[in-house]
Amino acid sequence: MDRESLRKKRRRMRRRRILKNAARISVSVVVGLLLITGVWQLLSPRMEKKGTSSGKGGVVQTVQAAAPEKEDGSGQAGVVKLTSVVPTNETPGWQYDATGWWYATSQETYYSNGWIDIDGSEYHFNKYGYIDTGWKAIGGKGYFFDEKGVYQPDRDASMMIAMTFDDGPSSYTSELLDVLEETGAKATFFMQGCNVEQYGVDNIPRMAALGCDIGNHSYDHPNMLESSQESVNAQFTKTDQLIAQYNNGQPASVVRFPYGNYNDELLQIAARPCFMWDVDTLDWKTKDVQSNISAVLDHVEPGDIVLMHDIYQATVESCKTIIPELISRGYELVTVRTLAAANGIELQNGQNYYNFRTQTQQEE
Image (cartoon, rainbow, N blue to C red; front, side, top):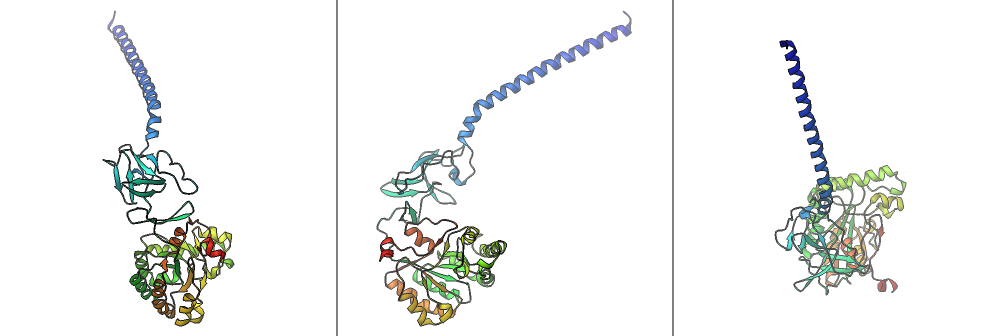
């Protein structure tokens, strides 16, 4: 055989070896892929059940939803599994994160959505697994929990009223906040954006620190029944943005419509609990200290919402008498949201509320 023929034969043999090796590799790859697919199908349901943590402390998102409470608010808290693949709590017991306190029943589970007795004290856990504090509406009744979340059955809500102030803030608002701070009273401020621009920086952080409700009362007080939907949206949005600058990034939590004028469409645009009033002092009309004092002290009843305006000096001056006198008569001055919760009303977005008197008081 000549050299050229030998060379050709060797090249053919080399090609056959290359093709044979490539075939072996291809088969190995296919088998490997089939094995990986089978293992994934076997393990993925377990991985999905266990979940991954995307909430604070692994509590906010759950593997399963806790059973809803009974209509009357009774029922023991459920035990829900944490979503974390690696449990965030090293030992069972009380846990704390940026949202609040929760209770780990094991390294993988926690209490949620109901009542539970722990070491002789009663607690109520919300649907996210955190304890309730302050007044909470549960099953149509008001329940009070102290700052540690312990239920206080003897706490009385029968003498509560809500003082509300529209159109501010103003140069007089700081004096009103002084009175609230001195007496421990709370109030709700429904503010105009145009005044927030001027006086918000000095007053809104203090309102929040004193535990007052922050409300939206439009940007410049138009009659919203005569405004377009776009205009109404702009009024609320601009005011919320201004408020958020001085309220830790949070917009107003409640709304009052200018002049009290509203319809169903406006309620949906507001998209928050909205409030009217029961006692109208007409302080904007009289601008008289004694008239304001009489308007409140001679007419207010437990559960009422009182309307005043902190843009008038006479109003703020009259509150220096009204607020201490109400307290001396046994009234507790709270925010509109607290008044609702204490009377068992769970506030809904897009609804308007007046007073929160008990059924017995309304019948009288």
